[in-house]
Image (cartoon, rainbow, N blue to C red; front, side, top):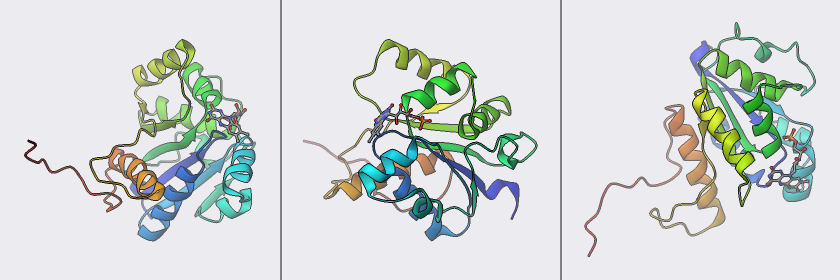
Length: 193
Ligand SMILES: Cc1cc2nc3c(=O)[nH]c(=O)nc-3n(C[C@H](O)[C@H](O)[C@H](O)COP(=O)(O)O)c2cc1C
């Protein structure tokens, strides 16, 4: 499989690990993307609490799975080519690490590598309300070339379930990597009034 088909998926310990599961299920169905998966240590708690699943059950969706403490892993180096990385969901702790360049674990190190290599980095940041510190960290990542893509629901596709809302956010993430999908109906324009 060529480098263009490798996508790094990071999962950190914020609320809404359902986003990660929806993303990983969608990628698995596609079969054309090689998923390199790294869960932070914090993710284990939110996955257990909100999904009732184990680290291993989520890791089963990855083609290649990494230990969050393995700083010698392939994805920790820029010489390992990928189409980029999404962190879904992204905690404020992970956002702060990426914004500051202080990257003690594999997930944050890999995000740092994407920035330095000018590869696509999408952070699905999950917190509300936002403090000025969060906003400044988002600014720093944006100025460095990353994309902040919070899970903000839209209603133009007439969602009928939570799953519809999750699929819309995941579809927006896939759009960032130009990965074709049919996760939600796109806005095609309409005559209002
Ligand atoms: C169930 C649960 C939900 C959480 N939700 C959030 C959240 O929405 N946003 C956030 O920034 N942190 C949240 N946290 C706190 C983070 O997990 C914590 O800051 C952790 O240190 C993040 O580490 P990581 O970024 O390495 O995963 C949550 C923790 C738990 C246990």
